[in-house]
Length: 289
Image (cartoon, rainbow, N blue to C red; front, top):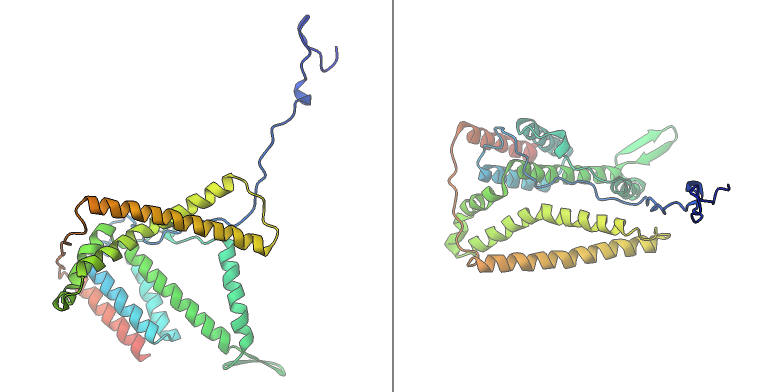
């Protein structure tokens, strides 16, 4: 009896298990992935920073951000960075809440540092008879640290503040603008919706990228193919975001429009006063050093 004959009497010949064609396996494509970016996501932890009035945190963010942006020195950025680390410790922010960027992001950061490093300028590093200018790299490093501390401070407010509590606090802070008949309620709703929809936009991008990888498209062979692939993802995300924005606008209109925003009252507790004092000290330190 051969390998292709049936072991039963008089039955048709069946191929053996070894001669059956194996199912086709999808090729594992190695390409850029969209990792988890936990920005503006509330971290449900009981901490003194979570119990603060949202307006206090927003005011501190605006004041420190303006101060360090107008005077971006190493000492000033170091003060803001220390304040950010202190806020993360007091707020009990876990390490898993930090964003995890893909490898191509860090490759892009290194590439952007090459041109400033080659521009030279004061200060200079003397290596024997040669002199290397570090002025361009110094400017790039200070700008990169400024971006990190600003994004980190904004993320800290998002990690410790519920999205539903942000609109009433902003309405209270914008009360003086009502004296000049500014559309405070509309502006507060726009800011609150933008903050609330930021995680949804990130999730939408991750879903679109995962759906594209499931289709197993051909791996790009040139830089033009990579740019075309990213362009397709961005256009699809734009169309999906427009559709979601239209659905949200219809839902708001069905409820009767924007309406009036209830303002929240700040609580003058010792923790609130301590944050105001610490913010004033940080702003003064950034302006003086």
